[in-house]
Image 1 (cartoon, one colour):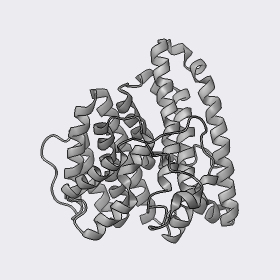
Image 2: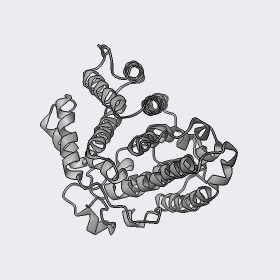
Image 3: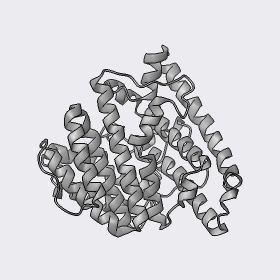
Length: 345
């Protein structure tokens, strides 16, 4: 799938963070300092993936320091995504419980010891991130980051369990927002967590009364289903080559007998329909939360958070054009894909 052909949110052109290269290089140095990249080939691989530049596309409006914090978080989560499949279910359960302990303590106190060789650098780097995150915003903000992180770890555990049981998550032909596959991916893709990062950048905590509404949940699930399916469409051939079953294109082929081309067309149609649905939900959102009696300012700030979710989606598509995680190293991705990188000052 050519990245430029993937349906995307429209609107104001997204311009990336002006200090993207500094953020990328410093987040890579942080991974090395934390002991996550001990081998030269690992350092080269992560440099090619440009994981630290990812948030500079998705959150281009942050300060340098907060943008660097998010780059370290996203680098850490990418590392988790790399090492989790190498562990059996029991190893992952032990490590995830240790990580949950660190998250709940905001990085304070002793880091649990024992476990696999990759476990200690993961825990120590997580503790560093927790301490920095707790210092970066309100208590409510940190609670959302911790809750979102624990939710994501639970999602990784579900994937590990399915892998151990040789079980395939269910998906329907319509790719409904509540199908088992997407409900699991909301966790690993970070639905709670990524919105918390946006709130931290804006210095605004979405009121709990809003979080509890179906209007809010419908908005987020629709938007994140777009991002998940965009990711699946861009990475379909990569995932197929790696025998990665957690991809909507692959699941439609396996569970419903579609050809790869038909599966890609179905995912493409679904993304376009969800974008239209999101635009409708965005328009009617104020009416759906009118009973909360939000002030005009609070409603405007909640809507700003919603708008930033669309920027996340656009930024991720731009990042896909320059990372070796999706584009082979040495290829001039932006020209070939007709999707110019928006991460330019």
